[in-house]
Picture 1 (cartoon, rainbow, N blue to C red):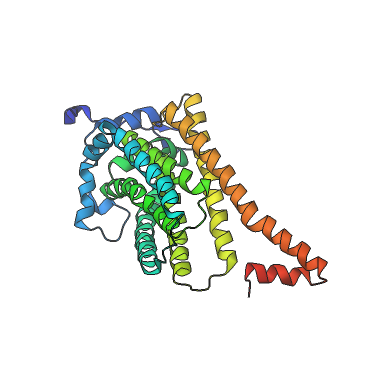
Picture 2: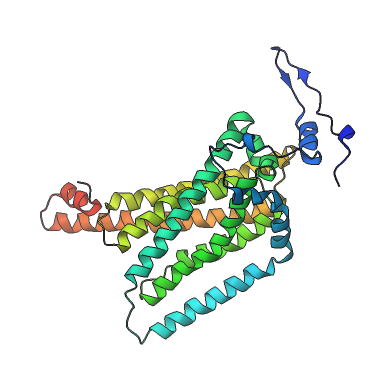
Length: 325
């Protein structure tokens, strides 16, 4: 229940030494959190909003559903792991499927979804940091709760983590190399996204946005590769570097929330979420860094040694390897 309008009084401001005025954060947060602030469409940071996106005004019901049925995420993960490793055994004695056209369509669909997700997520973060503060964006979820567009895309983000499990089906059916990083990342992202959506953690705005941005580049790259379109190797390197940066920022965001709570500031991210998320992002950072070293640094070093042994120009070999024209 919300308090009566008479109790919803905006907190007073206080003067500072330079003449500006400020509000105490705890009082301001209490006002924003308990008062039923009416939704105002014109205040959203978008040039156009679809009517179906306004369904996010009922996002608390979806959040409650994720909370009540948290075990469903583990069912998805269990089925995924069974199908993946059983599928690899089943395919061992069978020829690989081509699946080029389905793979192009699949990656193209996820490309469009990821690009539009980023298009919706970035303006919310930008306005929150610009108009309020980094602290507000990291620790307070007011704008998330009162932005139906972000709410509905946050829900779609969690659903997309279930859909993206289908990535592995193409790897299994085409008999490609299945990296630990691949299936571990899919499993843990789904579990954490479900868990955090149920809690509505403020740091999630950064996690969702950076993930959407990474996928907005990654899936178009996969689409081009599936269509056998030449893509410079440096683009793949750039995407991996962006993902490493994404994981480093995830560690930073959790450290920010941790120290904010340690200093006694109001921060809505629960302790257990900070610990789980920090460990998850640390593991991602190390795994993606190791992948980058294996895929690019060691291979390029190996080619350089072979080129030197044959008396070739090492620089030219590296340029050819990276496809820099």
